[in-house]
Amino acid sequence: MVNNDPGATTSKNENDIHLTLYYHRYSFYSQKVLLALYEKKLEFKKREVDITRGEQYGSWFLGLNPRGEVPVLQDGDKIIPESVRIIDYLEDHFNGDNVSALVPSDVSKKQKVLELRRILDQLPGNVLTIGSFHHKRFVDKPKLPFIGPVRWLLSRAEEKSAETLRINAEKIPAAREVLLRKAAAQEKTHEIVEDNEKFETALTQVDKALGNVEDALKNGPWIGGEQFTVADVSLAVLLERMSGLGLDSRLWGEREEIKNYYERLQQRESFKAAIPRGWSPLISLIQWQAPAAVTAIFSAVIAGLLIFRRRH
Ligand SMILES: N[C@@H](CCC(=O)N[C@@H](CS)C(=O)NCC(=O)O)C(=O)O
Image (cartoon, rainbow, N blue to C red; front, side):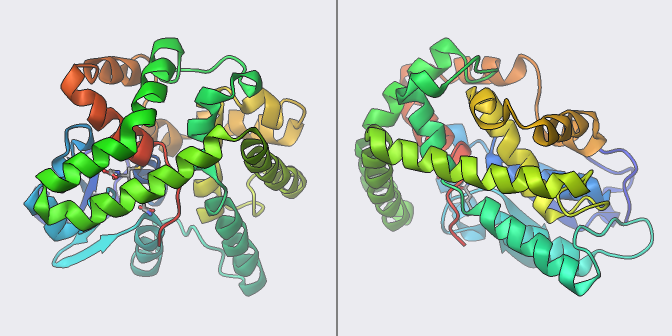
């Protein structure tokens, strides 16, 4: 089942498509899976879950993923949550002619690529995302959707988020445990992002990792060499987020390899298809500004959409 149109959502014969992706277009983790699916040119159905309005805590979705998080992949009667697990599943089950492999077949290259992915996936992106709203001195020219009013809104929503998650935990018994866990995690994150020193430590950690990426890219064009791999999937979405937040000049303003790599990414069809561009992200965020949705903005956008937390 190969899809030659990277932006296509459906095939002519829906019955032939066994893969369904439950996702949200601005979700960091969903974007990784979309990028992998488009790279592999697999046909799949998309079902957007409105995590800005709590659809992830509806019983139908909790049945798919009790954590109440996108992305989730359904392959026939198999349900696979967690972005890394989904990407590995795709890699294990969909290979062969016309399907790009995202993991090198050479054993030592494979190890290197998987190690790079592990390092990239562990970076404290959640802290940088939320922290960049507080520590403005590191931010230079943020891009859509992270511009002025949105930053202000997200920052305000973030302060109340743990409390909101606890209130929702009482309202949605089926998701009580998971919401209480998220509230506790959010309290910890909030403490870190408010602390200058801890925020700078997180920034240094990403900076150091990107120093190694810069060296690796000297043997590019992709991070593992000639082949676009799962490590590029992680790096691409990370760079896109950092650039959106306005941390790009700080993190790779002086790194020519990463600059050129990021340019190359923008030309790639899979990347264009996976990452929404233009005004639509901003319009969506503004639509969420209705008072009742401020809660959702935090829990979905900050705690979820923007969080890189690795919980698998
Ligand atoms: N470890 C998970 C994280 C998934 C995640 O945090 N998803 C966010 C969107 S990026 C979500 O669905 N958040 C909704 C919520 O927490 O209420 C993965 O890798 O897929």
